[in-house]
Image (tube, rainbow, N blue to C red; front, side):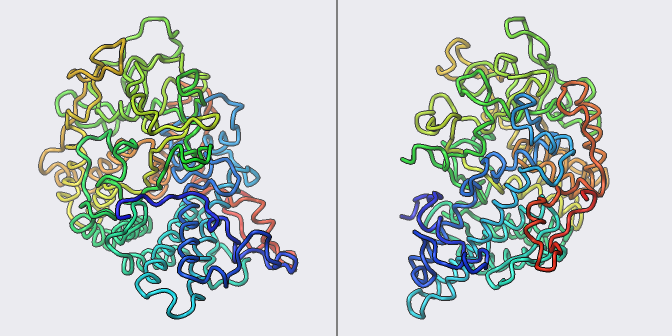
Length: 592
């Protein structure tokens, strides 16, 4: 069907044999219940394997904790990036603590989980390409073969991109690789580029199913790949095309959704801002939440209607970044932690509390749950009553991942001990594209154009119909919202000529700041800081500031030329030892 959404479940083909697995003789015997290559070498077989390659996007098919392997990267992107505390209590999921304070070592199991999830996806894409070559002539038409190949190479590039930005030095294995012990000291960016370029050149602009990638998703990801390598001219050129010509797989021209909050929730998903998203579905008959955004299952307020589990708590540092100037509505780029947004730390749930009354960017209250402010339609956030250990993780809860009370029967899944949701995980959305394009323009183009892209983002945020409003009846949130904003929202665009007058360095700082507040709690922050070269200063300043508020990161410290990447899992290094006793994989600097 033209508008059906591709179902990213673990199907028979998704669980099919890993065709490039270990080569020991006893493992070369056919696995019971698996399908051989000659059986799969049909159009139906190849398409089934491709569905399996899509199915690995959510990271749930390999038996590790889904909150570690989720493509949303809330641990590696936001907990590591000063936007979020691990949250909950210190002893729960304590392996994440090493990410939060950069004390992690190669034996930590979450590293192997993330590594394995990435290479599982790569193996599945390689299986598609390998078997596609074996389909007898005449059994699959050229256009279908080209599409399948391009989708598989897009997905392979995505999985490699994820591994590259987390681990840095990674081995490249493709459908032609026969010796799986490959070194991790060779450049993989050119190969990632090649796959995305192939996908851009060979994918159709329109797809028959939502969730399948199209040529414009590949173009956006190619631009992102250029940006990560500081290839600004190339990035600018491809982003120009995406912005002026690009559209979704079902033909919607790319653009910003009019109301900021509608970007995130299942009621409005697969909108014109969705460039590449991992599709999620609830109550699908499996009686579990594997397909229902289970990577976020820990990230709901505790002691609440959501039951579990109190992780992923926004930081005070992040909240303060949403302060704005009372006159201009512009952000405080350098001194945002002065005069912080008021919180309710150490204030009992039944004690009086008045929320902060200063001017704020309205995106704050669609990003962070804070006391006294409507938590979607679930009532006012009650503060410490929804927190497991306020002193440890702070006073806030995440919000972009939450489902609405009024539509929970349709978009939430209670099949497990923690909730699932139908909210897609957006890997790239159009606001992200605009901000990446603004970076490229600032580096290799026009500061005026860079400012225009940032102002498009801010103009959307300034749309009052997209602001959070107070309840019409505070005692009955399901009665809806009033016309009164929930807080003192004040946001403005940069006046004409501002970036040009400031010059390149300050204009870039404004673009970087805008990325933080627009994309907050979406898994990008740490990787942005690393590629900008800002990680050491920003994160150590954060540790100094935030450790006076919470107890969880008091020993946090970022070490330059080490912590930009996480250690290669020791178990993978051990498995790479050859017959001579030498490890093929080399540990990242600083972790030996």
